[in-house]
Image (cartoon, rainbow, N blue to C red; front, side, top):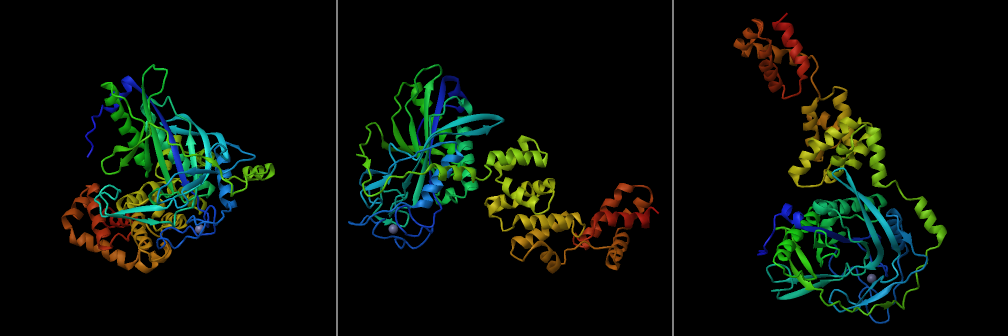
Amino acid sequence: MSTDRLVDFDEVLTRYEPVIGLETHVELGTASKMFCGCSTTFGEEPNTQTCPVCLGLPGSLPVANAAAIESTIRIGLALGCRIATWCRFARKNYFYPDIPKGFQTTQYDEPLCTAGHLDVEVDGETYRVEIERVHLEEDTGKNLHVGGATGRIHGASHSLIDYNRAGIPLVEIVTRPIPGAGAKAPEVAKAYVTELREILLALGVSEVRMEQGNLRCDVNTSLAPIGSLEWGTRTETKNVNSLRSVERAVRFEMRRQAALLDEDTRILQETRHFHEDTGTTSPGRSKEEATDYRYFPEPDLVPVAPDEEWVAKLLAELPELPAARRNRLSEEWGIAPTEMAWLVNAGAVGLVGDTVAAGASPADARKWWLGELARRANDAGVELAELAVTPAQVAELITLVASGTINDQLARQALDGVLAGEGGPAQVVESRGLAVMGESDELVAAVDAAIEGNPDVADKVRGGKVQAIGALVGAVMKTTRGKADAATVKRMLEERLVG
Ligand SMILES: [Zn+2]
């Protein structure tokens, strides 16, 4: 439990100006590791995807993964970076059990991509986030601390190491400090990671599943008194693993640091851990004294020298990026930027786009994804994209409603069937017998039964109280279990009672 004193968020802004910065690690989705041929499949038996290279055995030699270099250059190009014409990998020397070689192969003073930017929008305002560098390195293994209450090394009885992750290509994207966001700093941080994630998805370079650790964020936060010419000391909150947590981590650090600055306490330059359950951070490693990693150029790898033509080709072949796609779609769909922002927040832009491409109208596609389907995803605690229904099936459902085969209520029942794996919408309508009833004998009988069963209501309608007919429509809908068309039922009742 945190015992930190906190200042009200709004009050923080009356005295201090925040500066944030983000370091994002992205595990690339390459089939093999960065410097060896080992598979990168997630969730395999521990230590089954290893070889002498990624275990750091003596005499083994690394070879750089060309697909990983290509992906990194594409990320750099999408962020408007300069691409190095010549650069080298470096050894970052430190000992930790999850790093079997005793050093991490990374890039130091010669990153592959530099000086880019990403514009993000918060509440209709655009913030330009400058990208300092995008470089390529290898991931570490995974330590599992057993026996303690928290899963951290403290209090554990022993630790296990899984090297399956060791050597998976990792791209690090580092922003320059972002001043001037003021009260919006937490949201700008979240918007940046959201937009970056969208870009990585569009490029197809990573699955970017935050919960699987494909995308991990370190969030830097500092405060300086308003009007001060110098920035404050920053803390670095490590491995923040959800978009919402990025925002919460910045918010918490601003409130915590303001309380310390208020009482003239120095902010320690340190890494901090974020706690999902409480939304708080706690101290990790002190960074007051810079660690000397004794970087030096990796002697076992040739330099990377992407030739100009190749880079130009990669640039020309970049897919349409999310911001451009959103602009084009909001025009095509005739919707306001605010509604597009909802779709973005719901992670529904691609789904709606694919549903429209499968033949639905933009309005219907939006209605389904932001309405019924968003509700189902929310109830199930999953992302929209994780629902067991494809955009093509949603389009089919919409077509069935538009053609009058089913109504909205039956469409929801058909959706139940699709989500339960009973097949496509048309198939479920058929197998569950969900089609709207025509003016069949069965419906005539149901209408007559409703009149006979509710003589008082029928008399009221005959006497001129036309609104009372709703109760009879309801009775028919109930006996037909929603399969009748309400408008047809109403007309049939009127023919019998009003004349
Ligand atoms: Zn290997």
